[in-house]
Image (tube, rainbow, N blue to C red; front, side, top):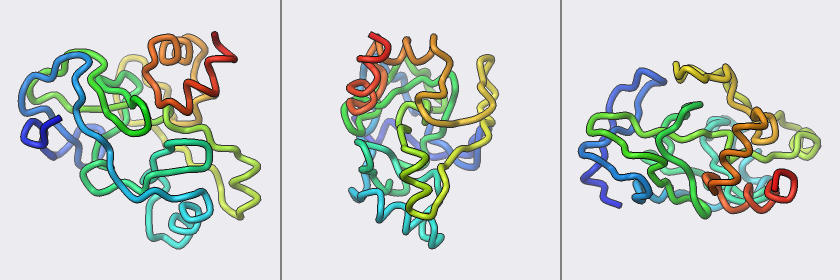
Length: 174
């Protein structure tokens, strides 16, 4: 993991993105996403009050989030990502990432919110129209459980998702 190996630039996906300055090998840790650890009540409050965007928090456990710092929130989503989240917030290369390639991960792999619980808190579940442009683009970023079965299987069987998602879904898929 080396901040000297990544840089923020304009992205064809959305606004700014993070790009590789050099080749990043498959399995290499790209970055550990950082931010303030918050429970669901605090994240809902921050989003509803406009302090944070609905896309800012990273799910790291059931009803636990990281309110990401600026660099960490700049990694964009792709339905055909080159990175994945391992553990709680370690961004790892899913495959070799070429110099000048945008570094992405599938946001849906970090999303396992309970719609009813979110609505009980007076908020709504976050989703996003996808603009990744990949051949297999799903058109929407939504909860892990909404992914196509083959994609869920791929992420779980290869452990290309955070620990809390793997724990929850391995029983269902495995």
